[in-house]
Length: 619
Image (cartoon, rainbow, N blue to C red; front, side, top):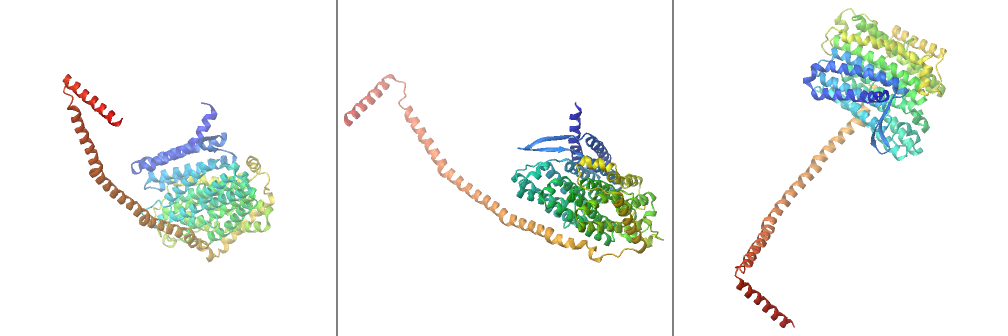
């Protein structure tokens, strides 16, 4: 087998392996629970090796799908950066889950592997058919994972709210596909900017809406809050390198399309900047650790979306990867504290970082990275985007800079948890939500160390000479690079805000505590109308379609009975009468057949005589 064939097979296997194993675990269910963890970890480890291999070789594969549009996958410089990140983060999250998730393991690990397969397909798709398939599977598995504890109604409702919100935005991708065909561009992602001008705007709008929905950008941000009802490992993967990140990734991939329209790039930039600012305020207002991290996810992805809108693909990509490690780390820390201490309230967790040094130190590293403190990862990656914003618009730059300052403010609230010192457990308020185990096992601590290293070092992607190489590989030569002055200024700003927040505290913006009222808005605009439509459709089905089907069945039965009567009384009677007459004729026809020769002569003479008489009469 040639090396090209081997790498092509590796790319297919990168998607098929976790999908097949995940589906198998889900189908097997409880009988496979004992094998779920080793099988899942082995699959994730192989996926990491496959991801690294395809990132190095960068193969492309395709299979026939429809006329002019294959089912095509490929690894280019952008996906070569993202695919190994997704695989590595998923494996670390699954290692943590081995000691954290103890019920329905086969279903949990099966869904997580299906989720991984969908993200891999999203990251490598070069045509819309595989992207649409991946988009659907991501939505379905996220719903199942958020509502994993399906016996609790509020968790199922949270999954439904998240699913319906993102699903409403997902329709934009189907509109984009239809517009691309109508505009003559075809379904290849690289060809979308070539659609005719009017249709190109529709394509860009559809892609923008779908991506903003997945990335939890305004006005779709609130679904991230409801997603916190899922297990902590689900939050860690969904908020770091998987579903939310794929919304930003799609806009980075579609940057030429956004730029070609003349308006979509600006819309994406402002959507990202405003989300980073407003959701940063939401994060500052939270008193629940997971809710704070959820709001910060939308805010940090705002910088990725901002980078895509400004054409700063290298900066946005670096920020996406660095944020994946940082946010996976912090969500796993939150999950470890929740399982051990029974709470995720910030006031109750104060001093929790001192109880388990490994958890506390890694949490501190992740928090400083989130704040943008030098030399942590998000410090340099964020600056790449901020410099591009400054070149585009002074107003946009001020908004983005304020959002960056807010990231230091909400990180300070987490840092207070790490460095505080409660006197007793009663004062700390442990066990306010669930019964804590008072332990964090080694399988749960080990991934934190690796992710902390990523949160510390991945900022190198935005520093010379790595940033120069990355920009060349991504073709990002137009956007400006952050100089020494910008990097120093950003570091000082982050440090000043962090120190001030730790010294004097933070005023909680009450107006932002309820996620800007997005819950009620989403409920009014998306969830309730969808559920009402579903109820109306169900009633229409019961009262109209079911009755019509039942009526047709009754009429069919009556028609069949009448047909049976006609068949028995008339058709069968007619057939029997014909048969009886034929039998009589047969008997009559046999009468002359006596076998006597003289009788045949007489019969012949009689027939001839009758013929002569007939001729005479007619003549």
